[in-house]
Image 1: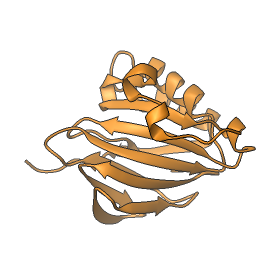
Image 2: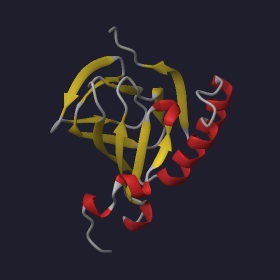
Image 3: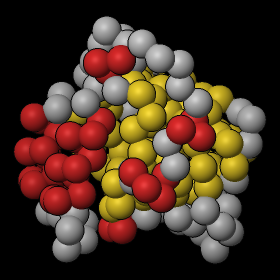
Length: 158
């Protein structure tokens, strides 16, 4: 395996764009590069956007904020993270987040064990091509990946 630098993966060149949830995402390290132990993704999230409440049956996610501010909810507990801060959502915990900055926020997400993020987010992009899908459509996609979608994204009062 060769060492990687985040700069090796320019987000503009390799990103998966999902406008319905304000997400540009690049997979920096695939599970095949870590013997299935981990995946590393880089995200840029538009202001006011984030994923719906969900849980991963098998994967732990470690979020490290590089730029901006996010409001996270993990198992019902709210926490604000800003550049340089890290949060862990263990497998089985419910979680969601929202970019609460005025501009784009940017973070790294380490997923363990490894997860085929390229395929999952490509499928999510296709499902969301016309906007947020019906809950049953999202549930079907989630079931395929051992992810339960449990509720709406976080919102913040203006």
